[in-house]
Length: 178
Image (cartoon, rainbow, N blue to C red):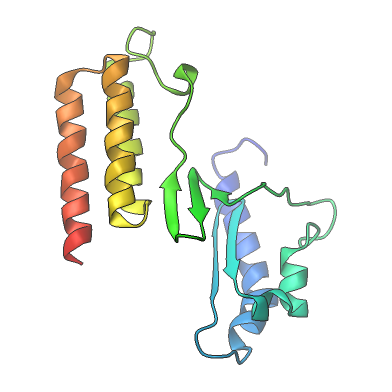
């Protein structure tokens, strides 16, 4: 049922089973040359596929990447470029950078009717996501610092800014030690 809190879980269960039975077994069981790349992930209805030419040319992958893979009336929409869930993937040099907000309306503003707690939550979740997922580590550090600076310019309290900086530093330190 569209709009139900249960919808994403049901979608995930059905689509995961379908993808596994139809595609993953064929794609991952196909012998491939050493060093060839195949990465597939999905978050609810967002899919990211990174593959080399060897896999891209296979009939299984051609069907998997087609817009009507799930049969009508379901149809996939394609995004231009290499964006996935708030990150842009660059191939040369290999990077995953955060798609940082560019406009004031993309932030919860401290002078709005929104609670301070919700604004702080937005700052923490965005900055931690960037620190965990941007790649390489220097890109994660730069993107997280830029995001925190944007919240600082909005007038978010220094207490929340310091807490976000501490959380980001913990994450980056842990990533560096891995």
